[in-house]
Length: 69
Image (cartoon, rainbow, N blue to C red; front, side, top):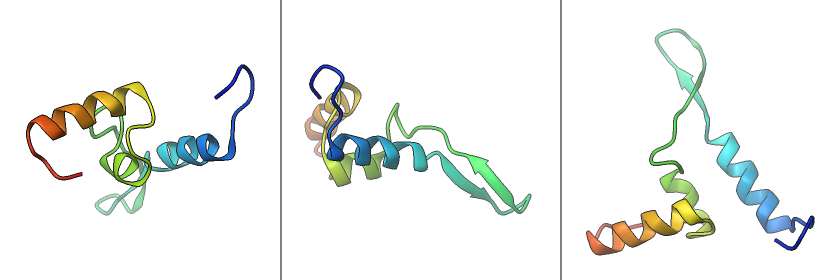
């Protein structure tokens, strides 16, 4: 991202992140808010890699623990 410019990939990454907050509560039969897996989402990390600071930190921890992405 360059001063005031957001590229298509960044928009896609941010949109996916926000959409991952949507979930379904089967008990109430309604849409529910989903909290972060870790200040991010594992599916976001799998899809786009560690594209921002919190995901970068999580990727390091997962690698140290030998957890699959």
